[in-house]
Image 1 (cartoon, rainbow, N blue to C red):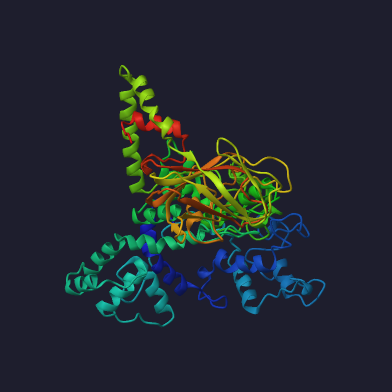
Image 2: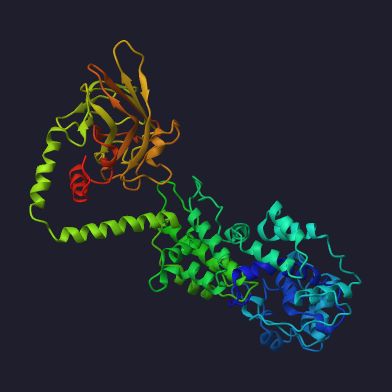
Length: 612
């Protein structure tokens, strides 16, 4: 495939190429003339299957210092004598009836068939020409064969027709337009044609009707969605992480990039460069960085206690192997342990290429992670950033009295803080844990953490308030104890209103947000009603964290009402809260941020002229 070709033009003709290859496959026992014999197609497979293990590239297993993969060496040792198969040692050994001399040795389990012997004899008779591996040979145009019929309309058709005529076959008659469109649509988009497309095609009697239909299908989004599957398989897109936990991975933005590349008709050389080295381009765009996710689909071992460097190296080797398989059509993986026995690759070649990939930071974990917003998300981000730039320009003017105005405005939050800690009046632990609450509202576990637990708090709340949200703040867990893992998993959070003389009323929570969430353990899963999911924050478990949960409807409290908060912590392994606070707010939810300290957030909002 020429690099000048676009991936779309390549995909559009691939079915024709496949048909040509299938028609042009030649049985080993059939060659109408000597010119048909090709080393790579006909001879190399025989030698690779039967000879190269002992007489190939790998010097550690080479016998008699004979290399049959190298023409000059084979001629020098008399294994092949071009033009003289009878005296060539290769044929002498293959035809020998002496079990001590015959090749391949009887105990190898290999046997060269009569048809293969004929191929080797014909090859030696015609000069024993060698060819480089096809992936090392620049593609070139072949002369069009001569045909008897004028059925062929395109150059590829000429090759197909020549092969049909050679075997005595005739092309099928042209199919009805409706069937032709159906086949075309399924080939290019994987979907049958729409009724509108069918009506349009059938009503068009011009000579360009078929070509126009091809152009319309190539321009549809479905084209990229269909043909991207081929490349996504090569990129290991559907693979899970592998190893012990074998969890799913989330990398759909790379899938989007591949689909867009096909639909934009990205040149194949650019398609290659961006996936292998998009990060090395000068001032790379987010899309070019996203393209490099081709090599982030390596396996990851999430089992505790594994050596990160060991599995980082395994991932680098996967990148080497995949790159050679996909772009060069070569199996290079064998050379990580020894020089390849079948392809012209030494162990030195392998680790020379390995060095290019041996610079990664991922270290067998989902980091570093690059934000890759969609086009719509990026437009919103750009709008926000523009607003910030404009605001910062205004701030530089430092209008007189600004600092005093800010101080005066913040005073109101002394009597009505943005977040106020809830005070417990009752607490029940299924495992018998006791909690102490200090003046700042922080809870502390007073004994060894259990493996898992269920907690139920009852909090007092003042009457005539309008509660809008709850906040959980966690401090890093204290060192020591039998559970060294500082992570916490809150599987489920349930809030109920308790009023005297009434049944407890469950309060719905929404719009959960946190300063950080562990991959696959996002904070919204703490309120999804599923006990097997939840909020956690590894690998940042040694840091303080907070999460905000909005009430679906603001709660106007009455006298003597209380809140009951239930926290399920059922993951096990001691991933239970240790030092933490539970707070409530009576302010508008647009003020309630999980990523900034309340005071800093209030100041930020004031500077943006947004007041409660």
